[in-house]
Amino acid sequence: MMKVIRFSGMFAAAVIAAMTLVSPASAQATRTWISGVGDDVNPCSRTAPCKTFQGAISKTANGGEIDTLDPGGFGAVTVTKAITLADEGVGEAGILVAGTNGITVNCVSDPNCVVILRGLVIDGGPVGSNSLNGVRFIAGRTLIIENCTIRNFTGGSPNGYGVNFNPSATQVENLLIRNSSIVTNGPLGGTGGGIFVQPSGAPTVNVTISNTQSSNNGFGLRVDTTLMSGGSVNTSVADSEMNNNQAAGIAAITAASGGIGNTINIQRTTIAHNPTGLNANGNAAVQHIGSSILFDSSTTGAKTVNGGTIDSTGGNSFFNNPTGPGPTLTIVGPF
Figure 1 (cartoon, rainbow, N blue to C red):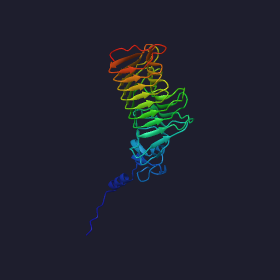
Figure 2: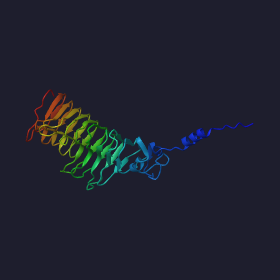
Figure 3: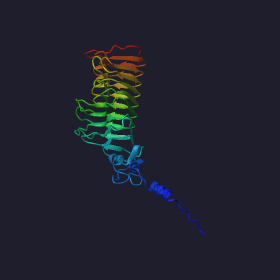
Figure 4: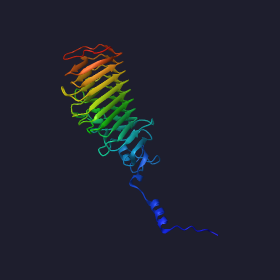
């Protein structure tokens, strides 16, 4: 004899509601996929990947990850939420653009968003493309760039940077760049360069650069606090190269007096073949250098202007650096 189980009307209604309830976020996956032969009408699953980062981002949950399945050109993208864009060694994951930014991070509605870029090749195209910036950071909490190549961004002022980090919120902001190559950015003889940190407002900004090459650019690294009304910027550069740039290898810039704190700590880094190796300009501009090599500057090895400070924490090798015109460095502390 078959036993029939009956539910009360209230319980049955609850079961049906639970089975049919679909939240708006349910259409978004934590991990999505893109392919050189994908299509943005697809759901961005591994078996039905999308074609571009921009096409996949709306189908990826906040804090999720977009991975590449094979080599391809995956297009410029604007990021407005926490996300990871990653290539895990399947071949070149390219973003080739002309006249625009490669990746724009603008988490204006999520000040705590963390954006990770891993294994990407971001290219501004051939000479004459005048592409703006490889990565432009406007709003969010943290930008992490690892194992990336960023090259050929030569747009005119206020653009032309491999990485252009411009937060303005009054909070802690973080930039981490590691194991990356940032090269041939900035128009010849014009503004622009490799890594440009220029916050505004009153954030506390922490910059960490490690095992990274910023070479053959307008400049290697420039940290500028002249637009800030408060806060500070603290930068660490380690195990890196800042070579063959058109201007300074590493520069810290503040207002001439009453400037916002701008400190750069440099360790185990090579700074070579730049017109100026180190430049500390402004009364709050400070650079500490240790266990590093600074050589073959064409004009000045290191210079301090408007009360800037450069000191050695020891273990350095400085040679073939002419003093050149203008205020120049008197090293403080042991080599």
